[in-house]
Length: 279
Image (cartoon, rainbow, N blue to C red; front, side):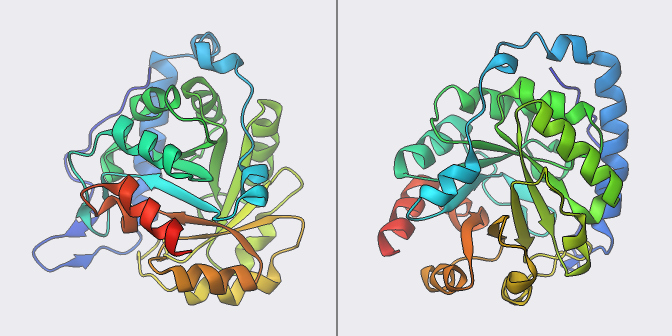
């Protein structure tokens, strides 16, 4: 369905020095603009709208989190710019079905190829075998990508405040709702909370700085009181202990997006089961 232009060198991680290049987000967005332009040419929106998944009613991640005892959004990703390959040969069907059966409140699936090793086919294949809401995890910069997400079978899209203007965030969130998709807005600091609008369903605090990929769980605690109560609060990245989840719950978080903690294990679904049992 979607063309992925493989970059020869994404310039993200210097393996010899172990140092992550700065401003990786800017590089990803530049790459994404090229990718989206190619996809528009190869697969127009009129074709996306004919996808069997396009007419399905989306599931609500917001309600799933509000009703869940764990609030875990487990993520499927093979690699990241900061770590390189995490689980190169991970089978998307095996892992996501395992997540769903283990009681995940939602499942996040990376569809970026160059930096995270994901594809649209990963989400499309998984959708058929899982019953919980699915977040398309990607770098959304264009309305076209919302139609892609709907055609893949996603229920939720991610908007990253650091990659968008306030107006772009509003326009994309509004269009997502028109298509029946929920919106998770991701912020990294207090200023970015100003991107939130009435079409945002969940507000996520990423504990990883997308400019440098440095990680600090303190970010979620610092921003908790600044997030309006009308948004379901989600803490993202850097969560590896059940005690951290319990502490985050006390300051109002309902969702906890976790990827590397599970994907680094031989059996990610079993890792999720163990984590939920400890909770």
